[in-house]
Image 1 (cartoon, helix red, strand yellow):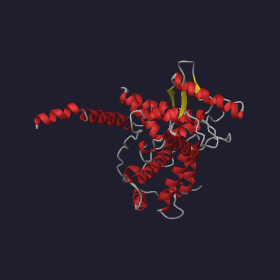
Image 2 (tube, rainbow, N blue to C red):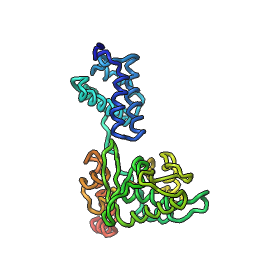
Image 3 (cartoon, one colour):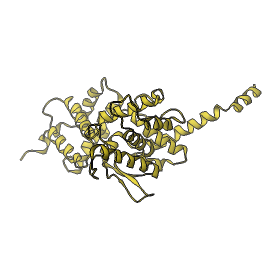
Image 4 (tube, rainbow, N blue to C red):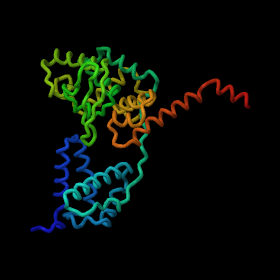
Length: 318
């Protein structure tokens, strides 16, 4: 019988990925796990076995891996290996997790990046609702539904793509959208009648284009009737920004996430606490949700500072 210490690490990685696949994460998540695990493993040489994974060897591999890479990339790889060893511990393959002995960079919590401008979300929705004749095949009902679900339910790009026609459930006045978030964590976000009507209008336009809609069908389609994919959804959102003339109000690198951040920031502005924001957005950490409240407080402070009366007081004291 093969000694467990001689088991190839590549085989264990495949077992880990298989176990993760049962949780139904996004294809992007599984690819990231595979890429991070194999990239660090490559730094250890060829034919690495379980017995080679000592804290000293892992530290050396991570040091080599970190050269020339951003701290966020190193942190993500560390998290992937931490999850991998957690799996091995639960399965009884190893007695303990060596990753606490491997250094990791400190990553500051990223600041929220909502759309800039008080009325920008409303301006965006109004513009997208208009049929743009410059498009080859305008479909404003679908575009408004995409933007509205991100703005009024805070859905991520992967969550929008995973929605089914039957994902909106409940009685009138108590509707909700059920989402499989990061790590397969399910959550339900309340849907107000106005958003419910926007989705119903989109589904009716879809029936006119492509016929019957079943609850198990992907919710969003492209103009050919095929399920909308990641690149297509990103292009759709960018197109909506251009049509509304607000590209200069979208934080760099945010794109669809700017809509989700706008949802969270407005929740904070309207009095939601960090725990409520955490549940609605599906955050794993309360610290992430707290960031929206801190940003809102900073905006409020800036608004007070801009008050002309305060400036007059300053002149008096001078």
